[in-house]
Amino acid sequence: MKVRKAVIPAAGLGTRFLPATKALAKEMLPIVDKPTIQFIVEEALKSGIEDILVVTGKSKRSIEDHFDSNFELEYNLKEKGKNELLKLVDETTGIRLHFIRQSHPRGLGDAVLQAKAFVGNEPFVVMLGDDLMDITNNKVIPLTKQLINDFEATHASTIAVMEVPHEDVSA
Image (cartoon, rainbow, N blue to C red; front, side):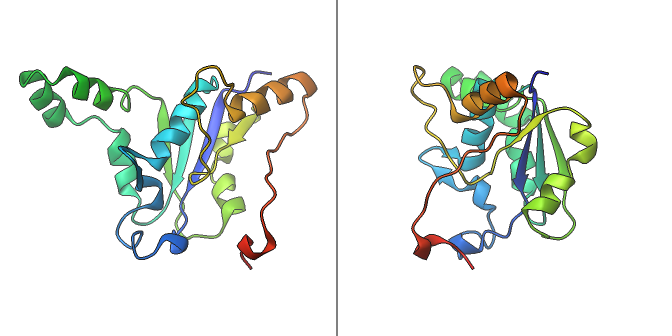
């Protein structure tokens, strides 16, 4: 069975990045000129994902706004001949994204459970909104695509892990 859906839990409080995340979702923190969550969505698309559900929470409306059309901005850019900027804006609007709001932050498991109706009985990937992989090198297969390939070959649940120093593990 083909993996075509992804769930991105993005409902956490972002306490490790305070005070920056008090008013701004951590998934919207920029890395140079793009918010973090855009890198996650781009990796999903490069991995063959067709449908993405983002599980959000309180104060996360900016994530939805980022991927929504902004006709006034697009019109303004077009009128001023800023085609390169218009292309960058357009890259975020043609994606099949769905959003569901987790009423209270009850952890990663509950955030994934919010996607139950979205995924149904289909295989899916969970992509954490603050774990970035370098997908700028087109010669390298994105990690998500590697995991999908492993799943499709074995039909077994597949997970990527990384060893971290004990002092970096939260209690």
